Image 1 (tube, rainbow, N blue to C red):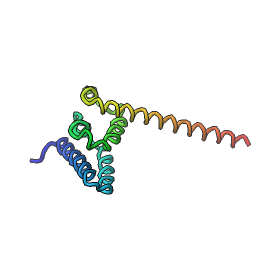
Image 2: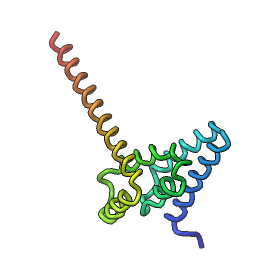
Image 3: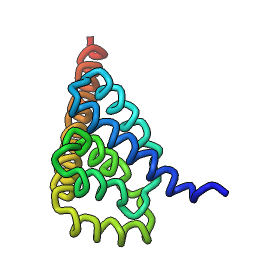
Image 4: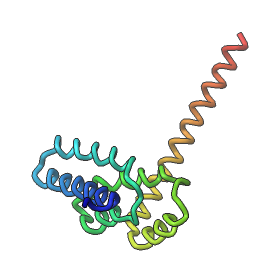
Length: 136
């Protein structure tokens, strides 16, 4: 019988982290970049599972997996309101247990807010320009 799906997901994501670290160690930038893209894509589908992957990247491989921290925090920032109540309690504990992740998550949230504000500004400018054009 195969393992639990969440365990399989965790193992796959840990494998990607380990592979990224190995590529970094042996100066294989192309492989490292490919793994980074695969890791980011997998994060988009990764089910939040008690912060196992966050702890693996931030605690187990604290310095070695530093390049994976930003996409991980950004992925969690995008989850936003999609976190269920039970996951919310786990997330709060995770932020207390891994303060570096809390800092990265705050940076990602601020970046996300900045991007939204910039997009809103560009949209407002387009509306103003259209109104000016329509007047003539």
